[in-house]
Length: 148
Image (cartoon, rainbow, N blue to C red; front, side, top):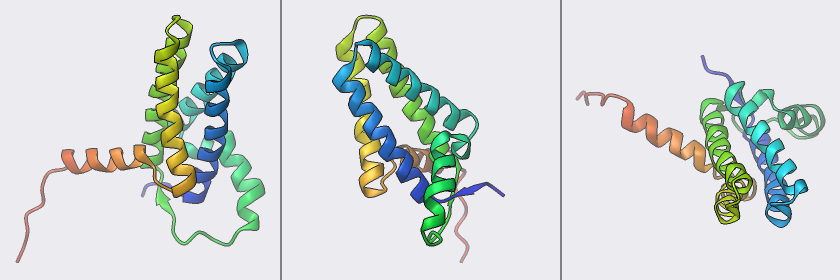
C-alpha cells in the first residue's frame, strides 16, 4: 500500500512556495534571491527524495494547521505530489544554474514557470506535476483487456 497524504497540506506547501519564488523573482540575482532559491531547491530535493511528508512544510501543516481543521474529504497517494516535487526541483535547479551562470533570463523564466505551477496548486488545488505523473502512468501501463 502506498502512503497517503492530506491534499490540503500540499496546497499549504504550494502557498509557501509561491511566496518564496515570488521573492526570488523580485530579488535575484542578488544574494537574497539566490539564497531563497537555493533553499527552495533543497526543499524540493527533500520532497522528491524522501517524500513530501518529510518536508518542513509538512511538519508545520501537521502540527499547527491540520489539528484546527476537520478531517480531509479524502486522502491522496503520495507518489504524484512526490513526482511534482521532482519537477519543481528541475525547474528551480535550472533557475539557480541560470542565475549563477550569468543568464538571468533563463533563471527568471524557469523560476516563473515553477511559480505559475505552485500558484495553480495553492489557489485551485491543481497540481501540474501530479497530472503529469498520472499521464505518464497511463502511457506506461499496459492496456487492460476489456471483458464483456
